[in-house]
Image 1 (cartoon, rainbow, N blue to C red):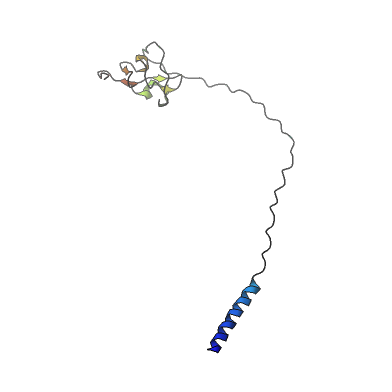
Image 2 (image 1 turned 180 degrees about the vertical axis):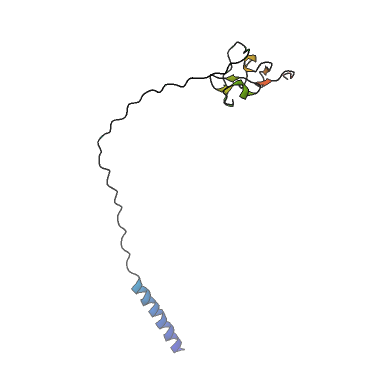
Length: 129
């Protein structure tokens, strides 16, 4: 039994000495060095800004358009360039959007009526409720 105790003690001593040899004090990390600021450069003159000529606005001719001021299109109004792309409503070419919601008969295509409660143009024969 003494022999086993000596072997165990020798094993523990050899492990401790092996670990002690491998562990060296860690070197302190290098301090952070900020990069040098960029060298100053000579000021470059800015190019002159010239106003561009606006593109001409092409409006589609409308047949028998009602006289009056069209409603200002709301945020959900669809983009358009002519009345054909607005279905039952008319295209407000000033804003390039369909007149939605409609405010009167001037905002609806010929033959359609404006339901001011819903802001929708209704086809002929459909009564607003």
